[in-house]
Image (cartoon, rainbow over all chains, first blue to last red; front, side, top):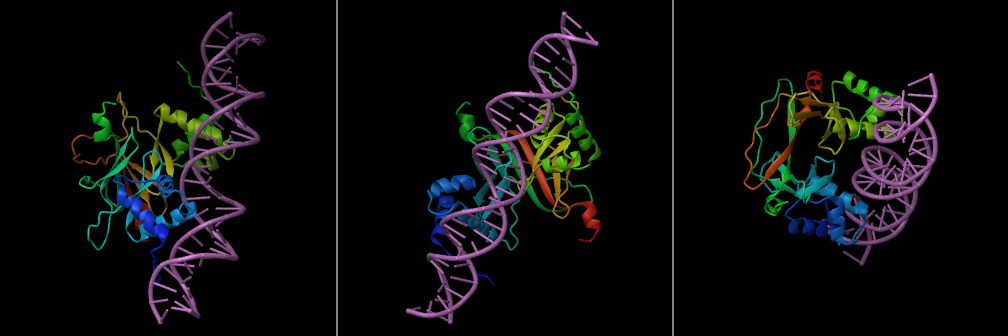
Length: 130
Length: 130
DNA sequence: AATTTAAACGCAACAATGTTGCAATTGATA
DNA sequence: TATCAATTGCAACATTGTTGCGTTTAAATT
């Protein structure tokens, strides 16, 4: 079995996630790291963190991709079935841990994963009277 | 006001959509058109068709983007709040027009659009005993 | 049918995002 | 400390999408 290592770059990426309340894109992470490591290294760290179930990947409506820390629900099988909110004004993406959609599927489909993303105005931008 | 024209390329793109039951990516459309027109032209046609509310854009879980014909619900405001199903085996994306999620939002959010994508196995692949 | 003109097009160039191969470096273990 | 596989940097490449500009063309007007 392959082991995983704690490197300076990985620690730095994790710190960036700890400090952020919202989901981050690869580019945003790169800027915050301030050239501590290569662009490619960040991609590989993100891949590892996803495999380790430390972060999860979010595909936004407009095609952009972001990453967010997982709230450790101590379950054996970790499914990200919570919703994400994408603000049209500030472009921040937040996890709505409490929002879980209910729905009725047609027969003959096997659902393994769901992605529920809402977009509009977040509380911050709504209050700013945009 | 700007007018819109019926060009050979646009007609061909529409025919491709008519023939397809599933959502299509830009690359898939290009292949089916068999170099009838330029890559860029397809992008511009897709943009126009979205503006005309003839097709809609779907961002998949894995970050890929596809387009599908709109089922004309003769409403004044056209909102695509139906679900999409993405098959993990054959990678086809289909619109689940009948599936609409219900959910409860926290206060202070203004929701303008929702994206509900489910992934797993479609009926075809489920029956094939993958 | 010929003229007009803005929409649509092709081409080239560019930007953003993500991937791969490989040699060099480094963390963790013995 | 020596070892060795995990990790990294670098270069190169692939894919996807955008922009500018000169040319072509649909369709309305004459």
